Image (tube, rainbow, N blue to C red; front, side, top):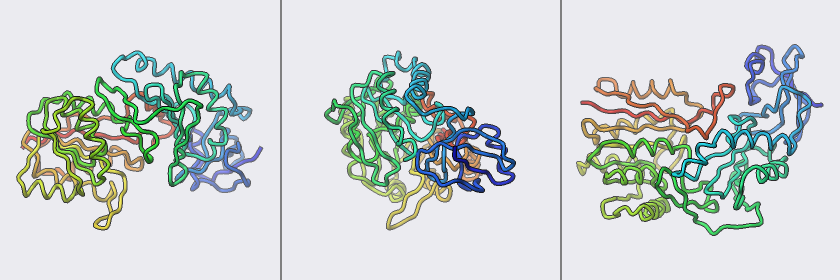
Length: 386
């Protein structure tokens, strides 16, 4: 079997069970094709486990098992999916939610792909060409374990993120899903996203429980999930996104939930321009949600969470009412929670505030201490007291 040898002094994290082989840690490796299994070896020649070769971001492979005899066959994937399904039994029995993640890569045992269930319509997202080599075994195992009405895939290792139907059966999009007794439109075939970020389910539910009277501002609104949650809680909302298509999705989701659109304002605008506009118009809010992409570039500005998030907070503070909340969210996997909280504290220095909640991924987005980047979502609720 082929092998990869680690650099000297890069052994420890893999001896401790680290699940993703990082390219920077490699000293020497055999020539390999995507999907090929290999033995990871420490610099002293010790075997550290069986991996498959698959490039993704800075990674070069994913751990399969400590056993070098493990095969990536239907039996292997069926066991993974059966365990994953059992872990999500409470969601299948909830009655108020029918869309969630049923398999979450490293958190459920093997990285490189995820599987989501949207009311029986399943979506596999492939992040690695390596694991895509095992597509047939994965699909057969998935269909054996789960009741799939239809099955689609998104190839996220392709920059265009194409979507294909796998099952013989098709569905006419959009479909409607239920989350915490709210409704959202879903479309697998319209770009790289689906219409909702499933990983923010608990945050939307938290927003729906806040006791607030004045309007909320939803920056980077996308399809308006946070706005729908706030509006169902009785708040008027202002939703902002630079994409015109997003506003159409927001209107659809308001209509699905019988929300009076006359009390909801929608803007197609750069969020930094919107913050200035709100200040000029003396618009104020009890709740401001800030959930930007990790990185973006426009004609006006280059934005990254690490370098520019504090500017969003600074722009939001003058238009936030006393006693109001900032909901500060990021999915940047390379920006750890302690760093994120430190930035928030530095930006709010001199203000009287309270961090009321710190939230992460919901339970269906299983994570593991053996790969810390799997815990990518960080959401901090900050109540401004002065």
